Image 1 (cartoon, one colour):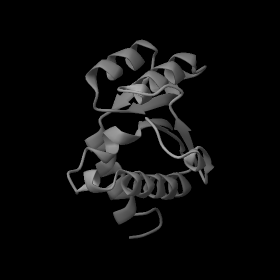
Image 2 (cartoon, rainbow, N blue to C red):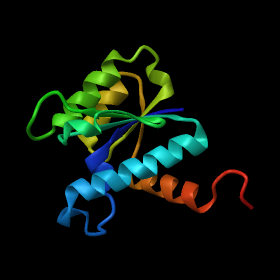
Image 3 (cartoon, one colour):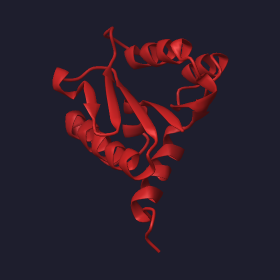
Length: 133
């Protein structure tokens, strides 16, 4: 399984006060994604609309991409571009709750999982990691 994650869609899927400190919320998500990738062995790429350059690149089993352009929907454009350029789109799942982006990436041949559903997947993985009864 390969994942392409719309970071702010996932962060915003849970009203836990993330808006008070967006950079901290993103770092918490990256920590959760890194733990998930380590436990599952799945490939995770996460796209940010913006952020400090030190976030870009590899973090354990997670690749962090900062959108090439700035402005509204910058991550959506980057995700659509990455999905369209993917050589094996049928093995890629885009995580977003944005219906316009979901339509675009489905047209490129990818699957889509909603941000809330993916949040629950991360929660379940933390609650019941492999090898724990």
